[in-house]
Structure formats: C-alpha cells, structure tokens
Length: 351
Image 1 (cartoon, rainbow, N blue to C red):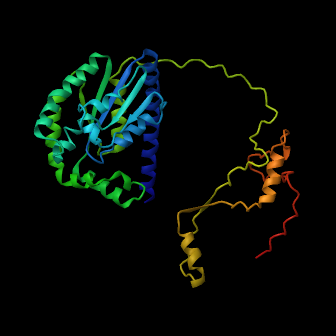
Image 2: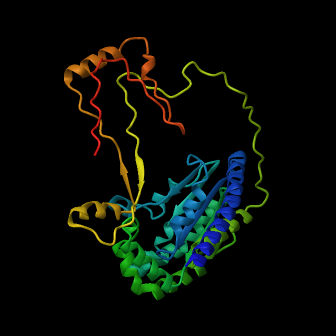
C-alpha cells in the first residue's frame, strides 16, 4: 500500500511540474495573442465524461479571465431554435486579443442531436454542408481555429459515470442524457466518423485526444495547442518595484462597529474508539468525520449598546484600539475596543 501511495505521489508531482511548464508557455501565448491582436478559438468536443472540463480548466485557470473566456451554452431556448443555427454562437466568438474556449459548440448537431434524434435528417445534412463554409468564413476573417475531440474507452466512461453518481460533489456533472448515452457508444462513434469526414480541413482541422489517462491527455492537448502556433513568445515587460514608504496604519484594520469574520479552525478527525460507551456515541460519530469547521458565534448586542457603538463609530477620529492584528506564531494579547466599558467576564470553570 505504501509503495502504491508513493508511486501515485511521484506521478502527481511529475504531472504538476509538467503542467506548470506548459502553463508558463500558455501565458506567453496569451501575451502574443494580446500583443498581435490575434483571435484564437479552441473547440472542445468528445465523449461524455472524457474530461473536457478538466482540460479547459487546465488552460483557463492560469490565464486572465478577461482575455481568455470559456463558453458553455445550455440547450437553446424556443427563440434560439427559430434562429439561424450558428447565430447564438457568433456573439461569443473572440475579439482582437482574446482566446475563447468552447465547451461543446455548434457540433452538438453532429453529435448528440444526431444520435438522439433532436434534429431532422434534413437539418443534419444541411449542417454538415454549412459547417465547413462557416468555419472557412471565420478563418478568412483571421480567426485561428483549433478543434479537439476528446475520446475514451467505454470501460473508462462507465467507471467515471459511476464515480459521478456516487460522489455528491460531482453529481451535477451527470445528466439524464449522459445516462441514456451509455447504450449509444457505437452510435456516437459512427456520428463522429461522419463529422470528421465532412468537417476536417486545413483551415479548421480536427485533432483527437486519448483521454483514458486524463492527466496525460491534458498535457498532450496543451502541448499540441502550443506547437500548432509557432513563434508566440513575447517577453515579459520589466516592472519597477521600488520599496514602499510604510503607511501610518500598515496593518489591516476596521472601524469601531465593523467586525472581522470569526476565524474558522480546522479540527483533524480523532480515531474512533474500539469500545465506546452509549454516552460517547455522539462524540464518536463526530470524531469519525474527516474534519470539522467551527467558529465562535458573536454574542447578541442590545439596541441600546448598538446605538452607542454607532455613535462612537461616527466620530471623525478612528479609535486606535479597533485595529486588529493578524495572528503570529506566538499568542497575541488583544486590547478591548474603547467603545463601551464592560464588566470583566467571569473566569470559565474548569471541567
């Protein structure tokens, strides 16, 4: 067991190191796009549970969200269904200096809509004819288009579906369509091959990514994306960062009536006792949890005291006693705010 954990840790460290290197170059690419006024469109299609979201996050998480945008549209409204099919996607295309990542795109018509019969045969045939022409217009206008299809074996897909069902944090990722698609693996394969044959071209090529190993797949995808756009290195501008003159109140502070949030404390789980008494059942149940977060509740304040506090807070001079210092490694004694004299609290009884 220890050997497996160590191997997993080494693999994770190797992945993190490789991803960091690629993310540094992704930032170079983003600077190049902004510097040159380029427009980059990256389309992510693929199997359900292949890992599109993770691949998109690996790219977007290290870039400025104002210049790198993720587009994940929900199903079209009744009004959008009456529009030209490509119309609702056009408004999300990149402007100068932008990178846009489509988490699924107009290729829904060639995939899920075809497989589940959400479009007619005539609409499907028209799409396969229109898509290359539409993308040629975008390419001729100067938009760089990269299209990725993320694939995985049926066994891997089933395993990931099961994990999403059992994990409450990932449950949102699975939909009724996903569950229905389990029986249509071959149908999706056939639809994909027709899509490739009709829409793969030099100006908007398809690239298939093996996502059976999601971490390796993400790295392969990012590396391919970077290699597909050569000579995109733009050096960082030098920034002068001179020492700053210390402010009079250089630590964070609050006025007399403004409080900091109560500080949460992390409590590690205690090992459950082998033989527990009935009276200890409740605490044993709590200690069996992975972790608990607790915070001290603020004591209620009467209307009279609150009014006095507000009166003090509105004075032009900021009370120095209201300044709160961050915790250091050694315990810090705090002085009570000079707002309203209070009687000293009784010492807690020892138990």
